[in-house]
Length: 270
Image (cartoon, rainbow, N blue to C red):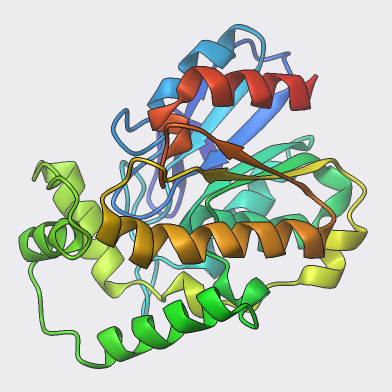
């Protein structure tokens, strides 16, 4: 069960913004973030609360939500359960970023009648496009890296994640470190089975958004951007979605180009 702007043990935390009677939108963030995080989450989507009821969910192990049970403190299946419960309160538009996009896809396939629209932002659903050469190469690289992954502290994880792609380091706040600790333990989303036929059959409008990655550091674009852009294009085709690229953004179009993306989302929801 969810309680807007609060949680009890076993509940996910949801930051609720906007008029209660307005159309509902559930946002699900990626790793090392939380719902209303202004740096990597959906804090920049707050202006949409003037016309819509925004439900910014903290995935289990992130933000103000409790941990999930063993053996994984959080994963895309737990996310899908929580999203489905939120959908059960009258349906909603769905938006998922990165890891959060996988849980959104699974929940949407379970409850297509409750989904008003589906938006995936840089989704980490590599299994939906595992036969594409760029995605297949990324899967091989990820598996090799995880096979030799050393024991890390959350601080080391944040630093290594940035250094490995030549990006700026993340700040080491308490919430960010908790998010990193969860990311170190959760089931990887790029091995998740994706219910493509059910998603293609779902009658709602669907949109897959990529960053353009044109100004990202070369290593970051090569290791992250190339497979993610390929995955987004293939996934859009296979679920019957429209694909679009947002200029001047990389893995976080909702943060890098919020005005453009917010306009796109509002048009879709209207």
